[in-house]
Amino acid sequence: MNIRLATIDDVPAILALSNHHVLHSAANFAIEPESLEAWREDFNETHEMYPWFVAAPEDGGDESILGFAKASPWKGRCAYAYSAEITVYVHPDHHRKGIGRALYAKLLETMKAQGYQTVLGGIALPNDASVALHESFGLTCSGVLKRVGWKFGKWHDVGYWQGVLNEGDAAPAAIRPVSEVTG
Image (tube, rainbow, N blue to C red; front, side, top):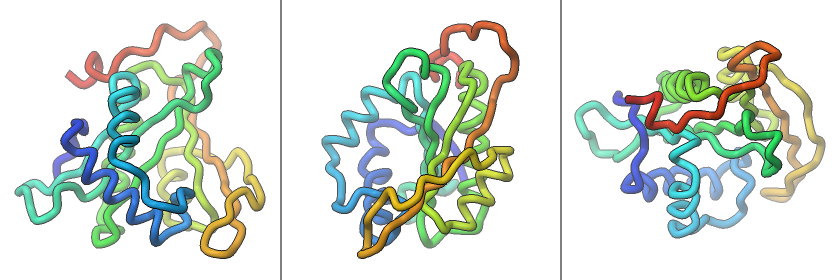
């Protein structure tokens, strides 16, 4: 498996994986497949400061990607600039093979080098595998929002797992672009 920065050419495969979860899982709260145009726009607007990674088969394989992980802004207000939301999706045929762990390891390493202080991962509950993955990286549950999503004919809770990447009370330096820390 090869973990690498995503490119605009990867967005259709990333979207296909995300849309699979839209249609078959409560892990993604979209209720209809999302558009390629919207995802390309999101990629173009965020990938310079918020990393996007894909896991690709080492040999090129039949599948274009095995999974993806990405960061996005946590909130729009300026004081939140050092926090980001993180997400990971793995192709359903490749669960429990270490792909999510490898993607998150690279994502969190990159974000720490960029200067992000805090990451937050939202998990539709119950989801023992996702909880275990987040906790294996030291993220802890900071709260559960009850009945915030209606999907597949029932209410879903969402827990937020939070991790601190950089400690200290000193004023942080500006967040560095992804390209500066990934070579």
